Length: 573
Ligand code: ADP
Image 1 (cartoon, rainbow, N blue to C red):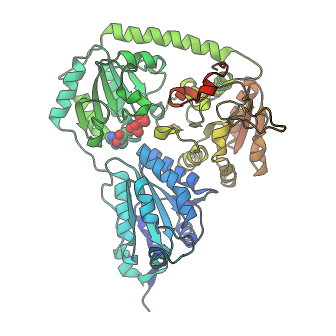
Image 2 (image 1 turned 180 degrees about the horizontal axis):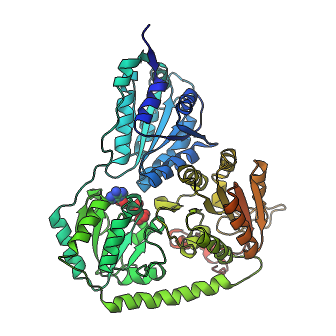
Image 3 (image 1 turned 90 degrees about the horizontal axis):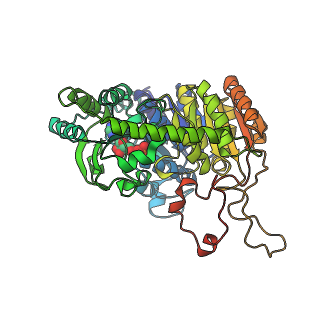
């Protein structure tokens, strides 16, 4: 009798042939057996409580490993829950593949009303770098290869791979099936920059009086840490890390301009962007945030990125490793000398800002405020530089980004290109699963709520994740009085949550450890203990509900009504 293989097994064979060793997902019709077969084959399957978190985990895995993270979703609503993560991966240029089971094509396309029927392929398309569907068992190997190649090559992104349930259930001759699966060769080929482009860029840099390098998360992703460091140090140019590039060179590096960020941005006359887009996170390169005369040089794998916001005087298309090697080598013939006044200007501002920061961190108000809690977290993380940091919230994000220095590349994962809330637990799970290292998720209480049920996932897999909730009881802050005070039993104001909620009990409900802290010293000892014990934990930090500002550092993006403009001005901490 000839041996046969079904679609489930072929998908798993195709993934394994391409080194996929972990799948993040939620089972259900029609992909439950896919997860079982994957697990039986040695692929690690991590089952979530909501698909967006599974997708976010896959995306974070892609960022950390430079291999596409895989998320598995069911048809219909499960698929839809995965889409925010697919879109977020694409926006952030993280390689990720959402594999989704789907309903019967014949029924969906004639809109006959099938179980969980949606035209998934077309629904996914606008949110993905590419969307493909496998319609025949013979195409499974090809479809997986195509998805992996697309996710990881060029500018990475999210890829949607649709597999209808009946294709998974089809069978074919096993030997013929094996021939349909292949391992892709050189998944993300190097792309060398043109020599004249390198020469042009070095010429511009050599003429600079106040040069600045901006390192973005594309540079962190590229895993070209040594060559980037060699170029930065050989040229002596000050650098500014974007938030997820923190640690690519240590924040304590003498050339870091992070503590003098606004000055560096406002005064730089030549800016070398390395894997960083001139999007809203960099004020689109516009004045007055940037000098109106600033010249931009940009390194990116996607040439269409150049000139998207400002004129790029020296575009360098290629992979960051190759481009930065060429720039480093070119420095011998065309050295860059950074004027001492520029270095001094930045150093003076850094000293001033560092002193201000130390003062704030040393305050000990009761109840605690953001800076005091973050000071305690900072002290513990300095003792644990290998811990991964996940960070989301408004004030919790903006302030932690400044207070918590990073010393190691790719150890900080945050809200990224969209500034999206809800990535917290998915990213934390991926960091723990992919690296085995302790993870500290610094969360606003509102941000935590978007993926909070994944605490159960963290506990079920016994992951070394500590979730620190900076609990001021609200979106932005927790002390707003509802405008409908005339009502007999007024509802809470739109921004208000519960400042006295004990989130730590959620961890205890699932067998993790809970801490409730009200002072920096309690926070410090709880965090040290929990990192050391590698026990899934929540530390609920009781903050002053009046701590925090509306929209964090993004107040300028928030249109306000005349009524709220005339409200009393609040303390801005
Ligand atoms: P940040 O938000 O940190 O400023 P962005 O996500 O805006 O960073 O920018 C990342 C950029 O890096 C994207 O434009 C992307 O095309 C680019 N990129 C990603 N990987 C590579 C790579 N290996 N080589 C070159 N550029 C890359």
